Image (cartoon, rainbow, N blue to C red; front, side, top):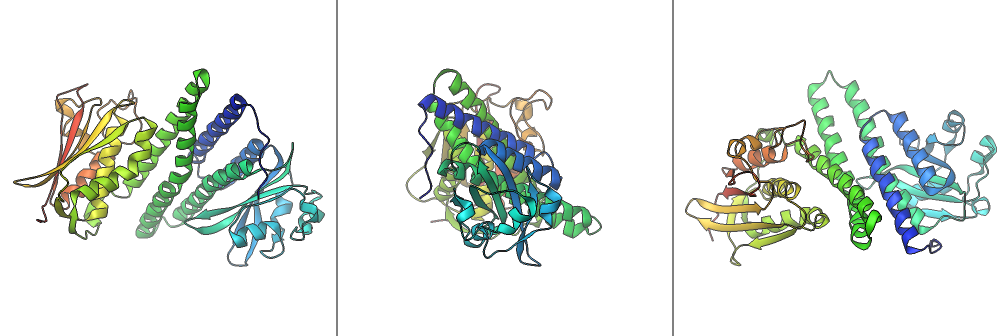
Length: 420
C-alpha cells in the first residue's frame, strides 16, 4: 500500500491542493502553447520536481527499434551523459514501471534488487527514494516519468496521483510534438499531412479530457467546500480549466469541418437516446456551472433515421454552446416531439440571447455572437457550424430562435422520422 501524506490542517490542505491545481492548469496551457520538444521536456521535468519537492525528475522514453528506455530529459544532472545510458526493461525500476504499466513508490531504492546501479555509477547521483509512473497514449505505453529523492519526508500516494496527472499531460504534449515534427517532414505529401494533422487534433483533444476532468472536479469541490478568498481562487482555477475544455472541444471540431467526406451509417434510433447520450457527455461542464439539464419529451420512443454518432456530436456542440453562454445556476431544457415534417428536437437556454441579425451568422465557421476583440467567452466559434454540417448532411435542418439580447435562445433540429 502506498504511504499516506501526514495530515495537515484543513485550510492548509485545501490551499496546497488549490496551488497544485493552479500549477497544473498553468502547465496544461503552456504545454499547448509550444510544440518544441526540448522546451516541452524541460518544462515538464522542472514543474514535476518543483511540485513534488524532490531533487530530480526525469523522463525516459521507449525506443521501439532497440527495446530499452533512454533518458529524454532530466533535471539536476548532465542530460547529455544520461542520454548515452540505455536503461533495460528488465532489472530496472523504470523498466518495472514500463513493463507492468503500474506506478511504484520506493523509499529505500538503494537496497531494491531492481535498482539499476549503472546510472548512479556513471553520473554519481545516489538514489534514496523514487516515484515512477507510466506515460501512455490510448493505453499505448510511451515511457516513464520519475521523481527522485524527496526533499522532505517520503513519497506518498498524493504525490503518485499528482505525478500521474503530469504524466498524462506530458504524454499528450510529447506525442503532439512528435506528430508535428513528422508533419513538417511530410509537407510535400498533402494527403499524409492532412492525416497527421487530424491525428494530432484527435489525440490531443481525446487525451486532454481526462486530466482536465480531474482538475475541473477538484476545483468544483474546492469552490463548494471553501469560503472567502480560497473559494474565489478555486473559481479562477475552475474558469481556466473550463476555458481549456472549450478549446479542446474546438480542436475536435476542426477535424469535422469537411463533412462532405464523412461516411454516414443511418439507422433507426430513439431521439430520447440521442439526447441522453449528449447530456452525459456535457454533464460535468453543466455541473461545474451549477446548471441543470432538464428533459421535456414523451416516454414513448420517437424514432429517427440518422447516424447516431454524428448526430450526438451535433447535439453536444449545441449543448456546449448553451452551457457556455448561460449564467451559473440556470436551467437548460432538452426536448423532442413528432410533427408533420419529421421529428423536432430542441435545446432551450436562458442565456445571453441572440440578436435577429446574428440568428444565421452564428452558424458560420469561426463566428460568434460577440465581437472577436471584445468577447468574454472562449472558443473558436466552430461548434454550431459543425452541428449544421452534420445535421444538413443527413437531410435534417437546424436553426435558432430568440427574441433578442438577454432573452435566451432555443436551437431547433428537425430530423427524418423512422416511424414506430
